[in-house]
Length: 457
Image (cartoon, rainbow, N blue to C red; front, top):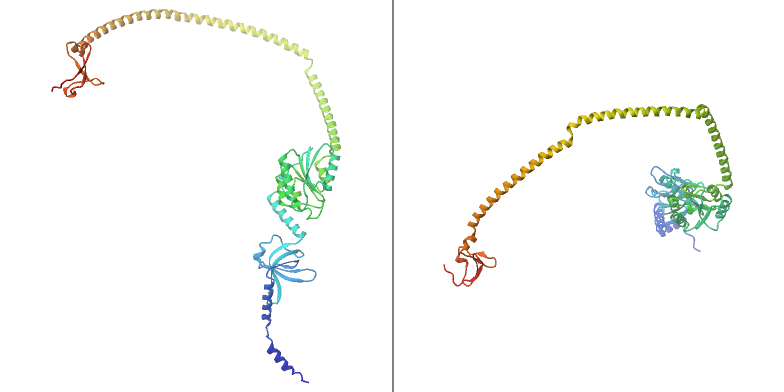
């Protein structure tokens, strides 16, 4: 039987058949294989050993019950985080798997991270709460006061939940005359936030409501999440009608609680907040009426006492009236005497003025002026007639001279004026006329229409 080759011979044969790799070569090949196979993966786990060195990168370990792995998020990616990672948080991450060759460790380089489960909801809640608070939506100065005694109240809630029954029951007990209207909406799940916001907008558009109450029973943060949506917060802030938020139990807080004009721990507490106890109001009114009656009685008593005091100071009014009547008679006599003296003085002054004005009486001066005016009028008429006669004589003389110079006098001596054409232009030269042309001859008496037989130069 053949014997086994010596150990040295076997080792030499093995080295001859195999390719020997260095540690770095093997690590490099593993790196290539892992990065090719796991170029982009999603995983979840719990954060531990979180570190933030001066470089700004985030180093951490992701673990679950059975395993752990290293992870890193470089500074350029951390800028997109919308929460603050911390040890113990469960997160969902995306990244590429690689091998860190100097240590031979495999790790994941992260490019995305978000909280997982209710932790994510809690972080989103705090983020929205901080942003709305910075905008001033939680400020007390912008919140409206609830009416003292609302007549119409609208409930935005699920019509089948216990919250609406609790609210209505307590409202009827406290103030049965109020009108309650239920606007049915979904209070959890997909689309609930949009329905709640739409209900608030519709109630404001319809008008006639004094208070809007948002309410539902308790539940997990996820169950109550519709009341933590930004669309609901904006609708509550924009409402012209005061809004009361009564969501969940006493320990539950929602974004709508902070934005609303008033927050109630439970639906029953909301009813107690909105509606005052009718019997307590009646008792309060009775107390006010008793206080008012006592006050009026006290004021009347005080007025009577003041009147009695003033009466003692005034004395007997009849004696005062008698004194005033006597004084009035004295004043009347004095007034009559003064009036008579004034009339006598003014009468004498009037007679003196009339005597001074007599020489300059207007009627006498008017008669003198009228006589002088009549004399001037007669003189003016005579001068006018003389002027007209002289003007008439001059006009007759000038008319005679003009008659002698008139062309008509020449025509009367046998001359004629030849006129040409429709315009009857005066013919001054034979060159203006052609043989056969019609001419109009103006004579001393009458006219002649002639035809030119011949034109002589």
